[in-house]
Amino acid sequence: MRQGIIFVLSGPSGVGKGTVLNKLLDNFNDIVYSISATTRKPRIGEVNGQDYFFFSREDFFKKIEKKDFIEWAKVHNNYYGTLRSYVEKIVKKGKDIILEIDIQGARQVKQEYNDAVYIFLSPPSIKDLKSRLDRRNSENIDNKLLRLKNAEIELKEKSKYDYEIINDQANKAAKKLKAIIIAERCRIR
Amino acid sequence: MRQGIIFVLSGPSGVGKGTVLNKLLDNFNDIVYSISATTRKPRIGEVNGQDYFFFSREDFFKKIEKKDFIEWAKVHNNYYGTLRSYVEKIVKKGKDIILEIDIQGARQVKQEYNDAVYIFLSPPSIKDLKSRLDRRNSENIDNKLLRLKNAEIELKEKSKYDYEIINDQANKAAKKLKAIIIAERCRIR
Image (cartoon, rainbow over all chains, first blue to last red; front, side, top):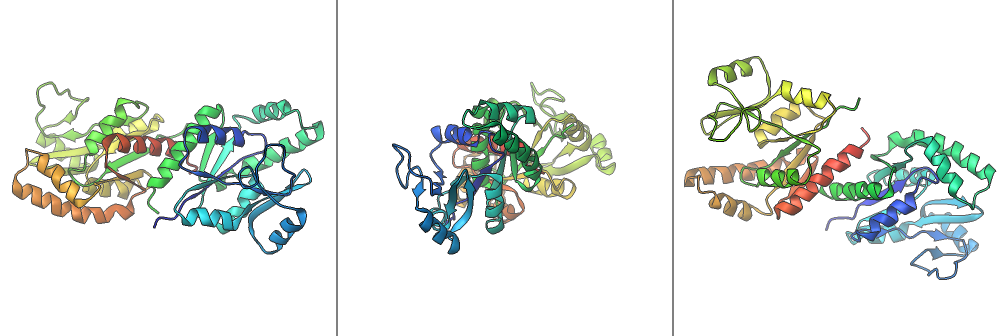
């Protein structure tokens, strides 16, 4: 049986990965959205195994030690990761899966899954990324500047990716993402 | 300026390349369909430089000698070819171009344009290809058998291509072709 394909959607913080992915999934359900594991407490309405796999810090750390994560990172004092067993199970069933992760995470995934499909979501310009970060109320000024600086560094990593989608409009970007998924299914490996 | 991408749509004779390409061009005009050169006489209504570039045998042979063709072939006592100058001109303008050619032709193009995008159109099965050839009235039995035998040989060449589209329905196949074009425009080279 055909194995599923792993798609990795990455890009600088604030570029709009989540929005583009949601637009994709709105009219395309023939791919599994990879659910992350986290130590963050569930918010009201969030369901374990649907929004996230929720873990205590202790359990999360054990899983790090056992190398149960394909990638993991600490973000704002919480831990996030992608469970290897979860991804492998889906791929072995022949289903494709898409991971929405930051650039550090994508780098980790690439070390193990070199033949996954790596898609880089770019801002139309650094200026545009700046104004996107400005619109996010939850960020303070220091964070914003740090993220902007990181973004400039991260943009240089694009060349390691298979595809670049410039996110000038989320709808258009989602259509391109869909095209990449359909095309990759036709790809002769 | 970005150079245009060369797409090569190939596959066994009778698989439906022309139909799929017409369906694509019906709702997608952001690509140039490569016009072939031929020694065949124009049919009523056919326009030089629009349907074909019409040449005398003498002129065509001169062009073969001068290596003016990326690929050429003799089919049913007429010669067909793709003019290098024509393709180069379009690509240099930054426009993408799609060539609809047989497997022999694709092989010739690949020698010169290794980074073109090669798409193999497959029949759902050999049985299906046989019935497609049966429906073509213009063929005699000998031709049909020969083409069927060639098709079996040609199917083995698939592995040299970048993509395979199984032509179970022309509309679906055209959508996949469109996805491949859009995806390749996002590809990081």
